[in-house]
Image (cartoon, rainbow, N blue to C red; front, side, top):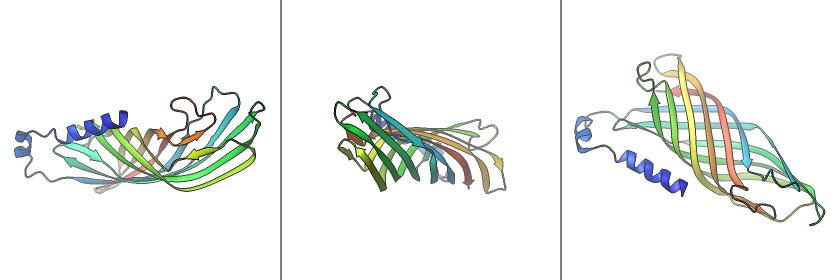
Length: 219
């Protein structure tokens, strides 16, 4: 439902150009910028911290991304592609169900964001010194390496996920007329991808990640 709401919101914002706005902007050029992102990401499969029989551990990994943005009728729409690595593990110790082992995950995915960008502080920067990004992100897992030791429960691990995303980006450092440097941070809470004996509550088994790093803007 959240993803559907965000899709409807994005469509509404895109169609929000009134007839008058279209006339005023008929000759306005669609401005495109290109963001190259490199940084770290933290997250993966959400565990249930309330269950004593399972503990999880997550390590930070590297992410890279390319994000073009389009100024359409005065509204900044951003899309692109992100590559993210994940490394995490679940340790099971449940004598009642004879589970005593460890499952280690190493996997990678592509994520495709689509966001509406609110541009703030335009007095200092025509494009907005600070961008607040709201939209949706869909992901597809392209690689996995899962190892087991001891006795672990059966599981399923879906490749596709989708959910809302929220982000911030700022590029205050001007290198030349074409290049700017700054930082970004993005958060995604996507749909359920992992199920085993212990994923019995909402959000547990869902995909979630926080990524941040350096962004190079090319205009």
